[in-house]
Image (cartoon, rainbow, N blue to C red; front, side, top):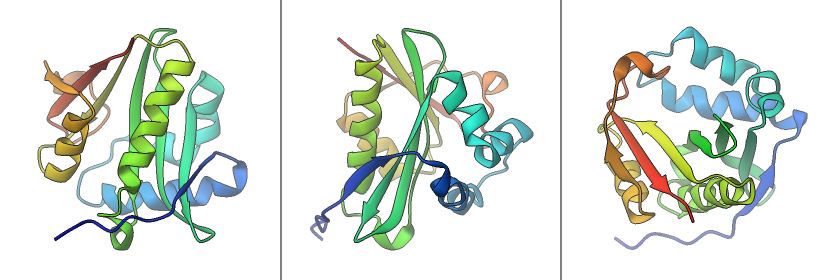
Length: 159
């Protein structure tokens, strides 16, 4: 089956989208246990992400928010891509790829040398998408992750 291409606009965070960010993330997090650190990030993204030098962006189709992603600042050279989510009925339309490209572009613009993400092998389609962008699996320490149920760390070196 060939994926459907959708005209999607990637827009930056504004407070009016806080509930969309929460709802999109709560949707996929139903599959996993959410610890208190991750819950705080989702419930207060301005404080937990934006004010710490990160960014949040959204996929909009026909005026409707259908996806989101975040870039978390670890240091001037290292960022984490997190909270990637696309509404189920819009999956398979390359929206996740557009969000991931936006995250990578923002990291490059910020001067990052590397981005990483934490995910789960249960999310096979997502893991394959990350690989097509050049992400490679690396050592994963579950004790260092705020994402319960995750089992993979993937890294992309930037130029």
